[in-house]
Image 1 (cartoon, one colour):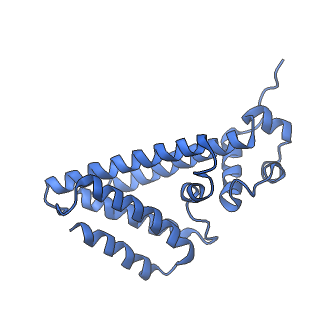
Image 2 (tube, helix red, strand yellow):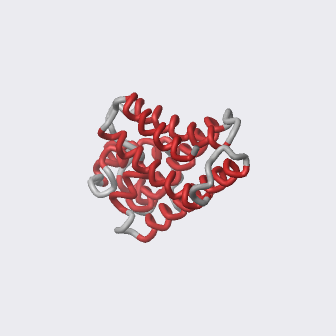
Length: 193
């Protein structure tokens, strides 16, 4: 008869996500995971299968949590342009709260793992495509309402914004000066007007 899980899976995912966020996938050992969760290796393997599967579970949960918080933040936006600005404001807040300069787990994963693992690459590409479509829809609506210029197509601006979002979050690891980050954000937004 298989053993029944006697631990809080959500808590374990949160604990392990913190380890992966601090150390990255490759530098995280199973012993790090055991130490963070207090579980033995067999419980971890029986519940998640492998470190790789556990990492994917952490990425999915991180993305879902992040998207839920961002959706709530965007709920106050009165226009597509304001939504785009609020996205960068949200990232700015996250950077300001990140006293360990860990950055974004998804961005960090992209630089560490995107070209090393098919399953992770597939997950990251889906996330990227979803984000690009969301941005393209915002820009297209902004262009229809004459809030965003027509110098580029909605798709071109979506790619521009996505690239800037990634770069902004990476830059925030090394630059914590809020006024400098606000200046970067303002330059990005000004390009659209």
